[in-house]
Image 1 (cartoon, rainbow, N blue to C red):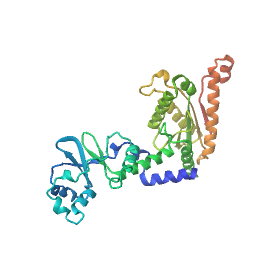
Image 2: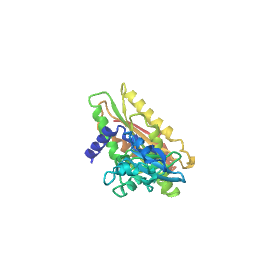
Image 3: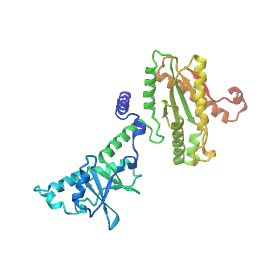
Image 4: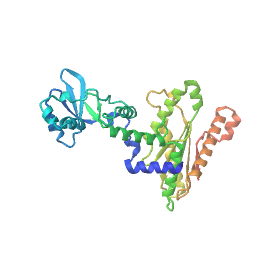
Amino acid sequence: MDDDLTLLADRLQHALGDYRTTAAATVKELARAVDVVDADMPIARLEVLFRSPHVTTVAVRDPDDPVRIGLVTRTRFTAAMTGRLGFGRAVHARRETGEIADWAPLVAPPSAPVSEVAVRAMERHDERRYDDVIVAGDVWAVASTSDLVHALSTLLAVRSLHDSLTGLEHRAMLQHRLAERCADLHGTAGRVVLVLLDVRGFRHLNVTRGFAFADVVLAALGARLRGIAPVRSDAARIGGDELALAATLHARDEQHAAQVADGLRQQLVERLAVPASGIDAADWPSLHAVVVWSEPGGGTPDELLRLAQRRLGEAKDRWRLRASGLPEVRSLLGGDELVEVVDL
């Protein structure tokens, strides 16, 4: 499984660069400008447009019905001008463009999902399957079927590496990234730092507000984490209500490593504490947070994850004990500290 993830991630990175930001979600992101002509324009003038190698499609407007739109592809135009017996040019030269237009093209709104439009495009009959798709709007545009299929395959690949609700990397992908970081730091003074975050009372939120609302909150947390994550770090959802962030740390010594790692943890907690737009402060959860870091040279991903999970479990247990309100329990906790800062 890990080898498959490595291969897929590396191939996407090589082919697309930062594949996480290049996967188009709507047809608007793929649309390009298209020439629009009137249906009564002579076909001889249409030929002038197709002399440009960059023109693959021309949109056709019906002067009597502004909403009606047709399409003439280069393939359709060439077939018409050639004709069955080679006399197409002589027959069509004086006719109107509307006579050779496809008046039933696939039309999609700009906000239509790439996945939906790509499937609809490939369901067309053979002679139309690879025609451009018209993107309706204030200005007409087109999206090529090849771009739609390419975007769809990229989206599917990206989703196989990421959590569908939050858009963050999933657990297996985080382990892959941690392994890469550890390998890259081998023989250096660099360290790998891992922050684990857990939503306090998430089960209670599910019970009192419902699973749909809890998912909204979790998705908002994921979006916030993606937005505040440092450059070249990896943000992930590793469990139902557990999030993580991995980064590379360069420190002078152990004390400096502790300061920098805990500074990262505090920064994340503080910036995640602000309720997302549209969610009441009373419904916005607080977080458990722990941070661990490796010895110089990178350590191993399994050690990092295992220790971070153990410390997070201990922090959650202490919080539950404190929430019970027993005086003797509070006295055993040694103050109000709920966050573990651990050196690996």
